[in-house]
Amino acid sequence: MFKAVLIDISGTLIVNDNQTQRSVVAALSRLSIPHKLLSNASKQSHSDAHFDLTTKLGLDISLSDLITPLSSCSQHIRDNNLNPLLLLTQSASKDFEGLVDSTKPLDSVVVGLAPDKFDYHSLNVAFRILKDIPQSQLIATHSSLYFQDKDDQLSLGPGPFIHALQSASGKSPLICGKPSSSFFITALDQLGINQQDYKDVAIVGDDALSDLGTDLPLAKILVKTGKYREGDERKIGRIFRLAYVSVIHMNFLFYTIMFANAFKQLPQQSRSFATTALRLKHTLPPLPYAYDALEPHISSDIHHATYVNGLNAAEESYVKAQNANDIKTLIALQPALKFNGGGHINHSLFWKNLTPDSGRTAPSGGLAEQINKDFGSFDALKGKVNAATAAIQGSGWGWLGYNKEAKRLEVATTANQDPLTHLTPIVGIDIWEHAFYLQYKNVKPDYLNAIWNVMDMQEAGKRFDEAA
Image (cartoon, rainbow, N blue to C red; front, side, top):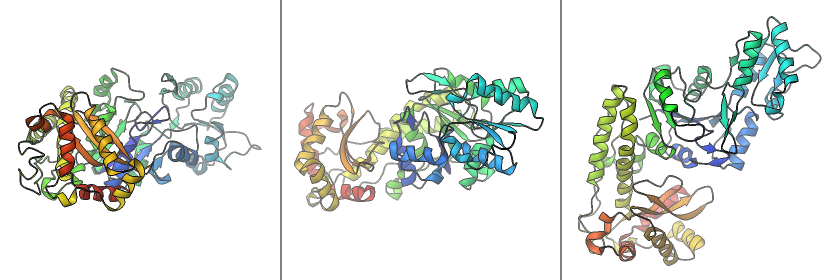
């Protein structure tokens, strides 16, 4: 399993100020997986960036979870007693308060993402400082060439302007943020990760050139969101030599990070963790009741061994491809890992959802109170879950989940074997044909009405209590 996870925020968790995978952060915290969130934010101070991420965008992170390059740049200014010209926004300049003495000559240049400062006059002043003062330094928060802007188009980052100053002045820039290895090492050091364990750390980003710690032997995961453009994966073979790389769609991020940890929530006998050193076989979780105990409501012939076998086979192939550095096969195997892994996760939770004990099928305690608050009654909840689940086109799952940020229960659906990732699952209902056809043919409503007769709402209550 991964010992820690580094996630670049922009383009992965957040795209154009919209949350995409907030649940991943919550899951990492819930499962006690050490992690840091990386941001090349140079338009805002460290504290302002944290405020926006938590207050405006709803990420549940502490100030120490967030790593930005501005603090590293300002520390370098202090350590070297420099008096810099700041090509920064007003917010970003807060991290340099007290470091600029207007009564003394400027002897260095700090460049961040500050579009209003990239005019001829400002750049020419910076050029003259770098050209005329022998010991002057060019310091950059990061050197990203472009970023995905709010209009979904790519916009210039500070990189081209830094390169222009470097070309004109002959001064090589000191990069405080991505893609500098020192930026990632700062995060790893704060997590207490030793160099020999770097290979057991996952790093996630949308920019193959900047986000993935090019020179470090990390498990690199390139997601197909944000700045990703078709063909970016072809850069991987030229760039990354020290560790395997996965190229994934964003909705596979949950699986990639969580496979080694997700089954902590299941009975001990059903856990089988995948590590870089050893991959153990996944097994079926033991049922806490007889195979036919749920009849006549649920058939004893329903099973999920196919997903377990498929997951084991896919993981074996993945290890072989990983050892052979066969990137094409690693990418090709991801749908099988997603499908079979999701099926195993979903069904393992599904069996825990069910009980032959009729005394456990009514909600109580905090869950009952929340159901009444959010839906009016248990019957009303069942009606909404059934309606949403029956409306699924093809195969999928119906869910009752808890939204920790909004502090409410919500009805949701997922396609195929995709697990619920944006909410904490409380109840899941399998609406694949194999779940109901033997008994109910194509009459989904009869199956959905019947399953509540064996739904273990006391188990659901435990999940709710943990989530709330």
